[in-house]
Image (cartoon, rainbow over all chains, first blue to last red):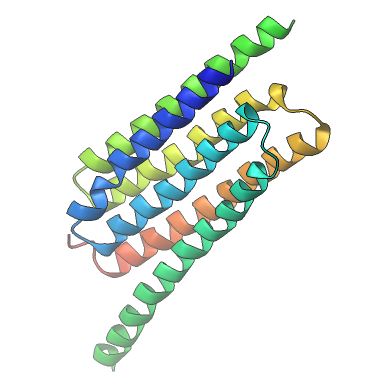
Length: 94
Length: 97
């Protein structure tokens, strides 16, 4: 059973690595942000699988921390994009 | 009994991994940013949700089970919120790419 969990974690990381290709090709920075968020969530899933498969303590807490940080990354990106559009919109708005 | 639980875990985790795969393929293949966002948020919430569901019967104590569900709830909330924010940022820029 543990082998299956580790294989599933490896498979999820492989799919996330394939998803990261979008970072290279992504036309807009929003696509790059999406790929980064998918990496965050895939990392959390893999960490949880590894936490359940191996007796190492604290891996689930690492996943909890990653879950929090992945959220902040997206919000930081949106603020940086939103801020530029805000000024641009107000500039040509008047 | 434990065989049934193991079987349930295997099926749930396989389904979760499948949704991750579907989401990543969607992220790569879809033509437009907003459709990619749709595929991504599906993979995030559903894939992780099924993995957590598959891990729940294997967990040692109730506290670990609560921690798993808390992680999933946090990712659900942050994933949904950031997907909405990214979508608004895309719409505000006219979604020209």
